[in-house]
Each structure stands twice: as C-alpha cells, then as structure tokens.
Image (tube, rainbow over all chains, first blue to last red; front, top):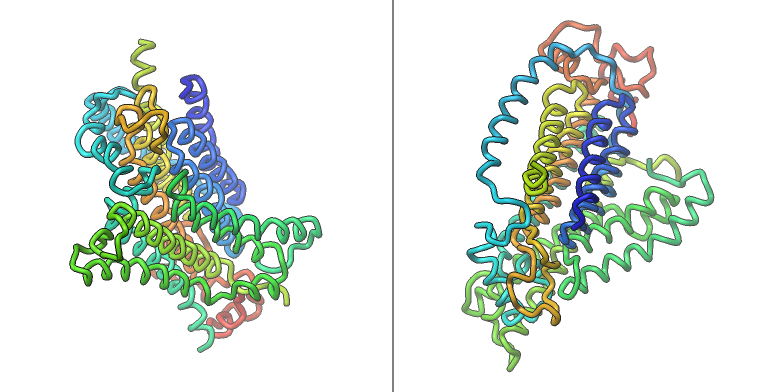
Length: 180
Length: 146
Length: 151
C-alpha cells in the first residue's frame, strides 16, 4: 500500500476517464474504458482486495470491453460533433451542488486505514475470527459469500441471469419483426 | 464480429489459448476456498475461454464445441442448483440454505458447510458463465462466414 | 496540510471521478458515451468502498497460520463481498444497456440523443432513416427495409 503508487494510479485513472469521454471514435473510447478498469484493478490489488481485483480485471477490462465492441461494431463508430455547449453549462451547477454535498459529507468519514473506524467494528471481526472454525474455509470472502450471506448471493445470481435474459429478449424482438 | 479472423497468427493463438483459459477458470472455481477467486471470477474466466473461439475461430469449430443453446441452459441450471441446495436444507429440517442441517452420516457440521459452499460456488460459476455467454451471443449476432 | 492529504486523498480522487462520470451521463449527447460515463461512475464507487475497507498493516482476508485468527490482522471482508456482487451486477447492467443501444440504432439509425428524441416526438421526416446495410433505393418503404437489415 505505497502512497505514491496509489496517488499515481489515481491520477492515471482521472486522465483515462477524461480522455474516454473526450475522444470521438467510439472504439477508442472503449479501449480507454478498458484501460480505466485495468488501473482500477491495480488499485484494488494495492489495497489487498484480491478477490475484487481479480473480478474487476476480468470483467471490467475484459468482458465489458468485448461487449461494448460487439455493440459498437454493429452500430455506429463515431460520435457526431454536436455543439452541446448549452448542455455543458447547464450541467456545471448540478455538478457543483453534488460536489459540495459530497465534500460536506466526507468530513464525517474516517481517515484512510484507521483500524478504529466504525465499519470495522460490529460483525466483521466476528466473521474473521469464527469463519475458519465454522466452515473450514480459509478464504473469508468465499465463506461469507456462500455461507453467511448466501441469500444475497442467490439474489445476485438471479439478477445477473435476469439481466442476460432481458438483453436477449430485447434483441430477439427485432428478429421476430423481420420474419414477419 | 463472429467468424474466422483473417490473420493466421490470431487464429492459432486463439485456438491454443482457449482451452487453457477455460481450465484456469475451472481451477479458480475449485480453489475458491483457499485463494482468491470463487464462483464469480471462475465463471467469468470460463466464459472468456468460450468467447475467445467465437471471436477468432471459424463458426463451425466455435459453435460446434459450445453451441448457442448452452448459454441460457447453463444459466438456468446454475440458478436451479443453487435454489435446490437451499431447499434440501429446508427439507432436512433446517433453515433455507443452512447446510449444517442436512445430517449425512458422521460428517462434522463444519465439513458439511464446507461442502455446501463448494456446491454453491459451482452453481454460481455455472450461472455466471451462462449469463456472460448468452449476452455475448446476442450482441454479436449471426456469424459472417460459413 | 500534507497529513490531511495523506489521510483523505482517496475521497478527493473518488469525488473527481464521480463528477467525471456524472458529467458523462448528463452532458454527452451520444448514447454510448452515456454508458461509458455510467461505467466510470460505478467503478469509482467500487474504489470508494474498497479503500474504506483498508486497515493499516493488515493483509488479505485469507486466514493464514502466520497471522492467526486475530481480526485486526486482516482487512475488512464485508465491503469485498458487497463490491464483488456489485461488479457482476454492473456488467449485467452494461449488457442490458448495450442491447437497448443496438435496438435503438436498429429502429432509428442513429445514436445521438437529440436526433432520437426528435424522431420519437414525431417530427415529420421522409420515412425511416435506414440501417447502413439498407439499399438506398428501398429506404422509403419501411417493410422492405426491415428485411434488408442484417446482423
């Protein structure tokens, strides 16, 4: 958890995010989005969140990029040059209000890495101490996911399957029209 | 987007790497107890091992080994397996998804929960694999070559 | 001042990323750019949560014999669980969003929001703006144009 590396990665993230929105070629925007997800995965790895880094690297930098490219290659490849300056100036007050609210809220949040933070009290130490004895599983996140909090995982699996089915149904409706 | 990639290098590398990627996905699912990974990461890597042939190889090979229908089938099967695991616990007298309630011989309660976690991880991996392959197949459309 | 930065730099960077994502969702006209903005926003939220789970000097939440079962030696596993779920659901959202994108393009021939809104609100234009694979001569008759558009 090296401070300079963390700050450098965050700066790279910001640059990549800004560029992903600025470029007009949509494939370049998708490539930048995949790079953004990869650097986020590096930050996760630096914060010793190993499961999350693995999943973010594969899903964010891999699968999301492939799905975007599949969709863009069947639609248009460039974003038109539109003079949206009025829309831009209208967005800035909203963003300023959002930022002000968030900065005010963040003053109540704990410092980074504080072991006395309220989030680390409560049930998390109980899970860490008891999970090996209760489930013989060294990986605490897996034990939480599949045993202590398995109903959340059931709901989430249902969500991902339903989302995939919904996407399939939206696209197949077109083929029905073509067939008559 | 689907169909044989024009470059021979890409076709060869895609064909060589895909089984290893799929095997790595299975490894991550199976070793979810001891290291990072588990059902979600393993299921997605398994899906990548199936999507890569669809991107690089001929449709006959790519859709011959893993046909289109396997996506929704795997998603439904994984979902069903997860729900059934929970119902088995209810039928044995415990709460929904309480693996320790199923009394099998003299296996300790912690071992039962270990096995329950393994079954659930495999079910989740299957469901996520099916969902990813389904979404990719629908977005990519029909193949552009024979 | 430097201490304040070291303690709270995460919130600063995450807020900047959230603002960039929100800007992308509000101000960009292209629908695919809006999805890009949404992905930037959700990934910034994941970063916020995971950085909130870090403890000084702690290691990954995999019980190892070297550290024992002392809860202070491991980072908080609950945010990891939550974000694992959120990442997969986020990909599901992107999948549905892209399916809708493709459908909108097939119906209207464009991905620019103002043009789609204009067509939906019924501004009279000559027939349907055809799919790029349509032959130009058949663009005026919508029934045959449907048959021409391929995947």
